[in-house]
Length: 177
Image 1 (tube, helix red, strand yellow):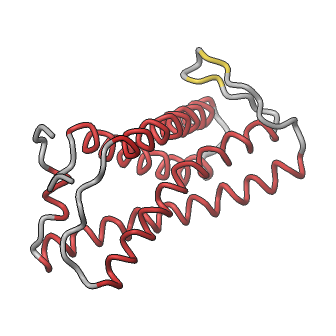
Image 2: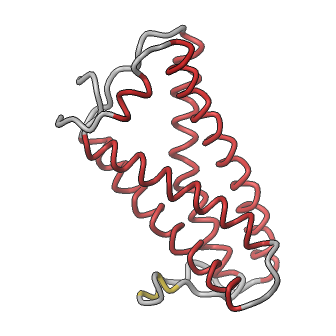
């Protein structure tokens, strides 16, 4: 194991992080927008970002399977367990949240055309009841994901400013592996 993350791992972390925060912000903003061409455009961008996050989830998972993460810095057992559990949930939500959005769009009868160029397959047939359930799941998933991202950020800041360890610094170093 190394004592730091690879450049690829760091780039994937920050890229996915920025995309998730953007998608969450767009998700909350667009639902309150009046019907307009701008609202439709924001919905499209939200979907495209979600598809990108889903694709990067698989890239990250493959990278993680082939490149071990550095060991956690020394910390109490409860904190280590919380870190491992919350990271597992974050990875799960990076899969579940885009999938529920894709399924919801399909069930609502709205196909996804990635970047306006690549039509994605419909994963489910149009069905109002299924769409309503998937919308509820996607909305709740947004709250769960936002909470996990917030906790992740707070934990990184705690490690940096209170524990004064290398947890955050290791994700900021752009060193070669």
